Image (cartoon, rainbow, N blue to C red; front, side, top):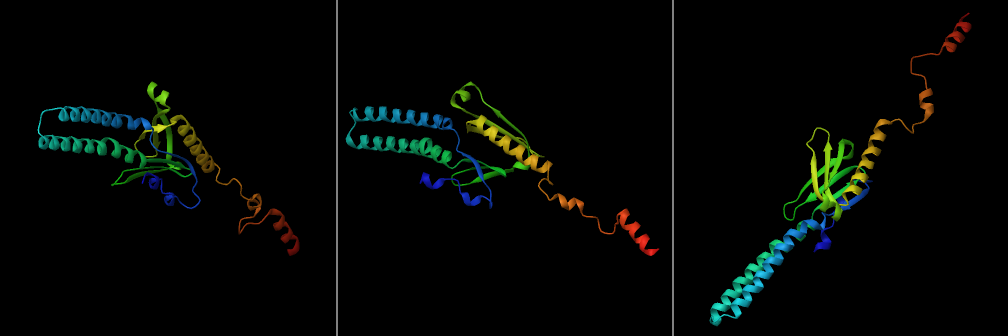
Amino acid sequence: MLGRMAYPRENLAPGERVVLHRHPHWKCLLGPFLLFAIVTAAAGVLIGVITSSSLRSTPQTVLLIAVAVVWAAGFCWYFIRPLLAWKTTHFVLTDRRVMFRNGIVTRSGIDIPIRRINTVEFRHGLVDRMLRTGTLVIESASDEPLSFDDIPQVERVHALLYHEVLDVHDDEDHPLEGRRRDSYDQPVAGTAHPGDRADRGGRDR
C-alpha cells in the first residue's frame, strides 16, 4: 500500500523535469512512535497484572479485550496514521515550480512557480544540524512566506532551489538571447536608407 503512494507524476506538465523529491525527515515520526512504545509497554504491564490476579476467567477476558482494544487504537493512531501521513507528504522541486502535497483522506497542495520566488531561506538548530534536516522558508511575490518543516538535507535543497531561481531569472533578464542576429538588420517597413533616396534622385534627373 505504501508503495502505491508515490508522487503522481501525471501531475507534471509536458516537458517538466523533476529536480528533487523528498518526504519529511524521519524525525517527525519519533514522537508518535515513542508514544506508541509507551502505550505498548503500559498494555504489557496491564496484561501481566490482569493474568496474575485472582479474578475469574470472565472478568479477566473482558479486561484483556479492553486492553487489546486500547492497544489497537494506539497502534492505529500513533503508528499507522503518522506513517501514512509521512508517506503521503511530498516536497517536489521541478524546473518550473515547487510543489507540496499532503493528506491521507483529504488531500491539500501548494504550487509555487519558480519565477515568482523572491527569497529562499533555511533554518535549523543544533539537533536539526546533527540530523541533517531543517525548515525551508520560501517567499514569493505578493504572498506571505511559506515554511516547510522537516526537510531532509535542507541545505542541499536550498542550494538546488536557489540555483533554479537564478536560472529562471537569468532567462527572464535575457529574453532575446539566442535569436538570429540578421533579424535586427531588417529595415522597418515604410523607411528608406539615405543611399536609396540618392539613387532615386539620380534616376529622376
